[in-house]
Length: 213
Image (tube, rainbow, N blue to C red):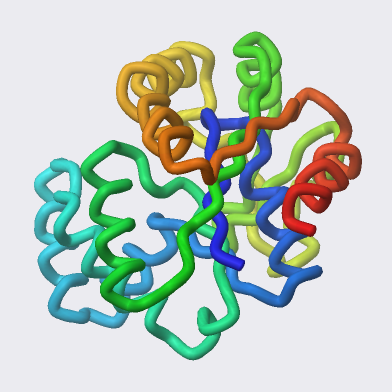
């Protein structure tokens, strides 16, 4: 099973990816995680990405695709994987299609999760994260403990700097201007589904499972 979870920031892609990963025994892969891993291991692509990020620039598609190729070629991806937050542009989607053909992998299925913008803003402005392990907390499904100490790693739970309304609206504009076009690409290839994410976590997950099964 080769899956792309698609949607604007705050629709719940990460939460659903974790549930799918646990049930279907396939890894959840995010470009952010892969970049951090490549930089941490100081691979050739990681070094290039680090230099670009330190200049405050966006990492080019060819480097991102190279890092993805290295990651999805690993043993734990042989039965499938979940891409969370990738592809973000049409060139990335086209590059991923060429990559899957070269590696002789099945075509990716793209599931879009949709949530009204007002709900996204409310979700993200109330979200908190562990600054050490990155675990997410929110008032509805996973409230932060009163002492704001992460029960997983003991790190401090904080509000992300970019989780303010002004920044969130800018991120949503970027999404609608650039990333939202990617769904048209997958619609053309008959591997696209769209579901309502403005429900409780379990209801959304059951709808995803009905597609996967």
